Length: 203
Image (tube, rainbow, N blue to C red; front, side, top):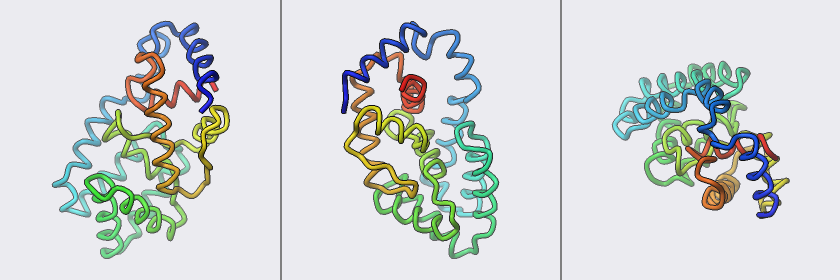
């Protein structure tokens, strides 16, 4: 990783917004994303017991994706329609993959979810990672393709971005973001989504 470029980006950002994400200008932007509300909703959606009722779980998952300001307007209806078109065995398979992703066997769950969504041509980074970053905002990351590509390129990360999601990239990208978090001012990372937002704005 190019730590020198990271430090330059941090200095520029703090020059423009001395309070980091607590700066009045950025607080306005933050309100649009309603992170606190989305985090609370995600904790409800992905709690262990929720996976025992596949239909109700998927209904709430579609709501979460629909309400997210970070998922593109183009992907939201496609995801909703794909979930609605699933038969009962597909639904159970998808819910089981997500249960692993959120509550044990993360690598397996990620790969299975990619496979299931891939059959419907909607294996998208944003759809796979949006719930993760809301559910564990300090531990997981949201992979927005343009931002991720930029971060990998500008900070010279030893990662190869591909449009089809892979566990290997997710794991490496998450490690890089958590490493960056340790090295920059805490005001730049109230959560990991904000931290990648800072990188998007400065790189």
